[in-house]
Length: 162
Image (cartoon, rainbow, N blue to C red):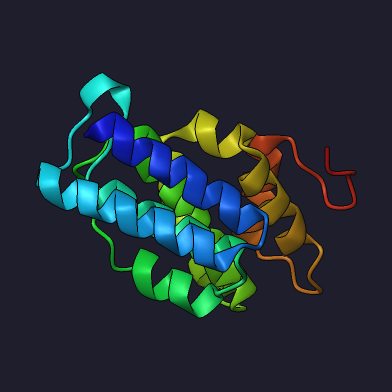
């Protein structure tokens, strides 16, 4: 059930990246049904699959589809403590990205800094967090904490994105 649900999460994300909302919603619904049948968060076959991971993916799918407020509504209150640290950190990065797009830079930065405490390497080397820090640095008033984080990441504003 975990593998089945996880495959639907991957398909939902792929559909969202292809801007296919209907297909993304179909796959999220199927993953959600599988998570409900499973009943709890687990890490069977290293999938980290369960209701929490479905909500994490709903946040990411919403961001990919440009639904920033929906991503924040789903992602910000979500308790991710039942999933592996990698999933917690990845969700925090996605939530930070949503907050930054909603022009809540201080909240976005706070989410990134919290994530850095949990998984420093994941934050420092994940392309999404690096891009987010570059975007924050490109603002007229660069927050001191963003400059300090960029130093730890080895990121400078104006650098090309890979």
